[in-house]
Length: 330
Image 1 (cartoon, rainbow, N blue to C red):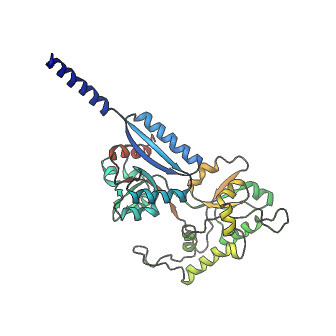
Image 2 (cartoon, helix red, strand yellow):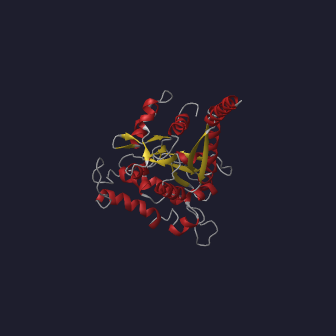
Image 3 (spheres, rainbow, N blue to C red):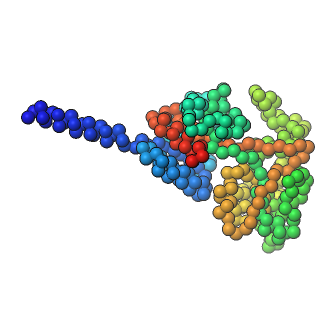
C-alpha cells in the first residue's frame, strides 16, 4: 500500500510539474504616446498573444514622453526596469554605456523570422553602440511640416510646395499668425515647433554649417561659428522678430502639438510618429510638406527601438515578442 501511495504521489508531482511548465511566461513592456499609439500597442500585443499563448505581455503605458523618460531612468537605476522598453536612438548611449541593456544584435543574427537586411541601414546604424546593435528599430521617419489646409484656405495662402525656401516658410507663417478678435493677443499661430536642438539641427545643416566639431568623434558644439550662428539666429527670430510661434509661457500653458490638433496653429513640425494622432482629427483637413531649404536641403532622422533590459529573466520570450513586432505578421 505504501508503495502504491508513493507511486501516486510521484505521478501527481509529474502532473503538477507539467502544468507549471505550461504556465505563460510574463514579459513586461513599457510604452509611451497618445491614445492612438497606446491602442496600436495593445492591438499588437493582442495579436502576439493569440499567436503565442505561452507568453503574456504586461503593458505599462505612460502618455507623457517626459514622464516616460523619468520613469525609464528611475526604473533602470533601481534595477527594476521593464523587460522591453521603447527608446529613441538619441537616448540609447547613456543606458548602453552603463551595461543596462542586453544587446539585440546576437538575437537578430540567430533569427529565422527577420534579418538586418529588412531594416534601413541608417536606422540600424543609429542604434549601434561601439559597433554592437543595442536595440531594434521600430520605426523611421524624418522631420516634416504638418499643415492645416482649412486655415490656409481661409487666409488665401497657397499650400507649401515641395521646394520652398526659408523666406517662403517664414512669410507663410506670418500670413497665418492672427489676432482674430482684435484684443491684442494672438489667437492663431502660423507655426509650432519644439525649441530643441533636434528641431534646430536640420536648419543648421541647411545653412551648410556644422553642429559639432567632429561628427565621428564630437567633443563640443559649434553653434557660435558664423554659419551655425546665422541659422540659430534665424530659428530664434521665428519668435523674437516674426512672432509666429508661441513664447515659453504660452507653450507651457498649451504645447504646439495640442494647438495644432485644436486647429489654432497652422503648421507644426513633427515626425511620422504624430500621424496616428492626427488621423483622428475630424475638425479640419491636414497634409504634409517637406522642410524648407536654404543653401542646401537637410533633414533629421527620427527612430525609436525595442530595447531589452539586461536584468530581464525572460529574455527569449521578450525577444520572441520583439521579433514578432518587427515581422510582416506584426
